Image (cartoon, rainbow, N blue to C red; front, side, top):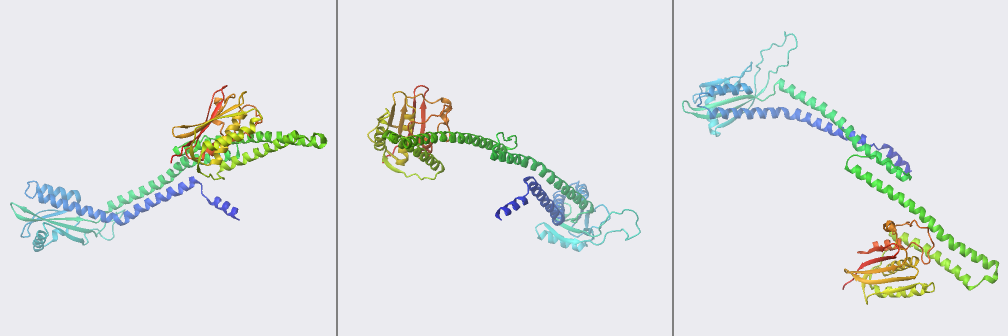
Length: 495
């Protein structure tokens, strides 16, 4: 049932390209809606605020030039440019100069009685020289009849809001003067239609841009990802030549490179896995064949039940046990299944005991272990695992030692680290494969031979154990025909 739900959920998921189209379309729709809201709610107040601001600027400009010979020209220009009514009157309420707007609108400013003008002058002076009148609803100023007109007659409003601004100025010729400026704060029909056309045009443009942009962006973003998803599927299926042609922005290129690296690692791992199976099969088959052969020999010929034949069976069984143990150990170490137990110990004492035991074990085969060391060296590490590491390095050196069958172990302090070197005098390691000898499943191109001691998985275990020790170092120095020196380093413990 859970699988069925997951499949249904997967079918309901939209492709990235479609999601981008939906997201961009919604974003453009929100922007368009915001534009219409601003137009509906803020267009008229903003228009009125601008008109009032211009009326105040006009009144201030007239006051600053009250005694200029070009005052009348200034008043006419200001009136014509922004459709303003401007009136100048003296302290008695008598008009000095006025400029009416063009058209049929009757300015309320010019219908103010003389006594009211005197009152406005006093109120403006008391207010600090500037005074605003509340918005007024003008009377019907239209001269068009209700009917009888033919053709397409534009809409003409007969009601509009007005605002009056008053300011005082001191004239050398007339004394204190009242300057009145009246403006219409209701947008005219042409302004309304202009804004409407702009909003409609922006709406169409934003929606078209959103849809087109989402398709273009969706194609540039989604197509490379879809292609790389197919590449990942090809890698999972184990195809030898996955398609890495997808390219685009930085993240896609980085993902492509990561997938290419993963494909390479998967290919190498598969190659090493096949080699491991072949090698392990070889190592298992040989002792099993010997065990079976000697057992059948002693069964068929009772007189062959000798001690040396029993020893062969025991040795081969021991080899099988060691091989299986090392394989399990390597798997647990690399997968983190076995925890490290760190403690402080004298690595010289530990290694001396190991080499003494191991030397006696291989002495009958003609091998000799030489150990050069300091008197004492403390380290903080997992003692059992370090013993296993050195044991594997010694076994590796024994397997590839030269004709002298001498393996040299040296311990000394190097730059604050305890260094342990295991040297053989064999053929050495090819430079081309040095970086790979520690890898899991790796085997050199030489024909695989059965180890004299150990199982052949030692170096992989060395790598896994040393990487789990803080400050742990491992490596190899080798020269063709002059043997190899494998080494490990651990930080020296200081009290």
